[in-house]
Length: 367
Image 1 (spheres, rainbow, N blue to C red):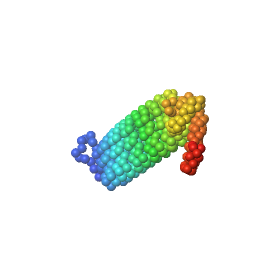
Image 2 (tube, rainbow, N blue to C red; image 1 turned 45 degrees about the horizontal axis):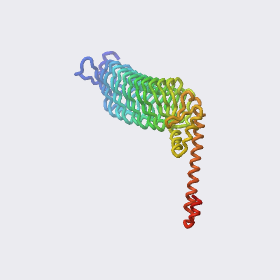
Image 3 (cartoon, helix red, strand yellow; image 1 turned 45 degrees about the vertical axis):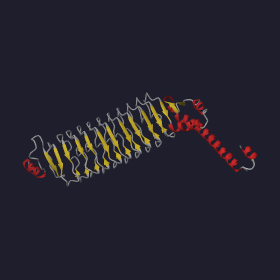
Image 4 (cartoon, rainbow, N blue to C red; image 1 turned 180 degrees about the vertical axis):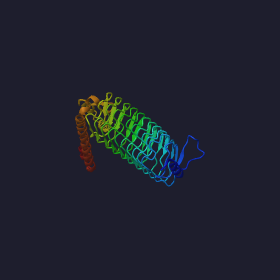
């Protein structure tokens, strides 16, 4: 086809805005048969379009505005990759799938709105979107895929909703301005390096429900100061919090948790581990009349009882399982002892209640 014939065909397949300034090229996208000029700046999708082809607008550096239609179902691989001028995108409520790399390299993209009904976010879908500032993941998304937001160095806010089950490796790797994250209770796994290098991350809220934190998940989160591990977590992997140099305190609610020897490798400020559930049991024992348990606990090497809390200093972290066995054994002894006393008192009360009321001497003997 000659260049003149191509221009005629293009004019038939696209609708140009005659009133647009010379610097703007506007088209209505009607599907894969559209010939799209490389200098296009504004695109409006026809209501009948149900999918965006792979690579449809990839590398269109001048594209600044895209209006997607309700009824659209899928956005293909690399569909808008490297559209350096694109600043915002709203995904219609009908879209269920965004394929891998769809918006990767959109370096000026500041706003992306994802709506309910979306179920599938492909690998590296917003990879290296340097200007993206916030994102809300709909409850319909069950998995944040590999490197989905990796390199989004301006991302300050991430909202995750119940329904999410898995955060894959490198999902938020290098999101250096992210300040806090709350993991929903429906999440079971956070995979390796998911938040690696989030150097401004100060707050991590892990809710009941999550079971595992894998290797380097929160590695090099150098602003993180305290972490509370819920009772459902059973395992912490190697370097899960490696090189978190500001981390000072770990609060553990499951005293049966398995922690890799190098889970906190390089955490130079980490001072202590706390165990609230064990501390509560000890305080209960003290309150019913056994204050001597405090001295007994302090006699266990590497274990401290301070301010009503069980603490194991970081320097003894490698022995925490061995020390906890002794603490739990001591607690169990006192709890059994107290239970036995209560049982005996119940028997005595029953005997008194059954004594012949006409025989005061019998009642005095039972007392």
